Length: 132
Image 1 (spheres, rainbow, N blue to C red):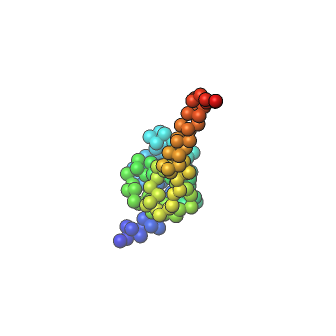
Image 2 (cartoon, rainbow, N blue to C red):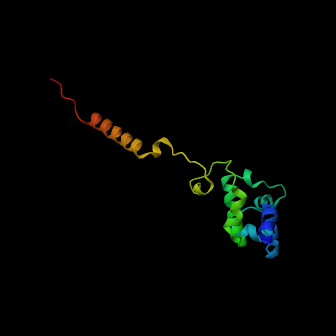
Image 3 (cartoon, rainbow, N blue to C red):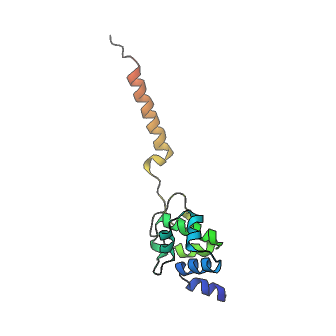
């Protein structure tokens, strides 16, 4: 129980930096292993980091960094429970209860109507018109 309280009170940036330091991994080594710039990693470990304001890509960087450090995914996920940003289709939006709207052409009935209209147009343009 005490461990859970400690995790909940630890900021994300402090968790990342302390875990990295405990493993004896320098920022430069982590940067090379993640193929991220040193500046990006410094930003993730900087005081004042607000996880709920990170973009989808930045959240992905945090997840990759946490995976490199061997942190559990569930531990990182609790920092991202607020849904203020749109998620990419690569992220599980069901887990956070966010609604997603498919674009108009994403609906299969619209796709088929569009294809049917194109076929009809091609037929009209290629079939010779007979006049009396």
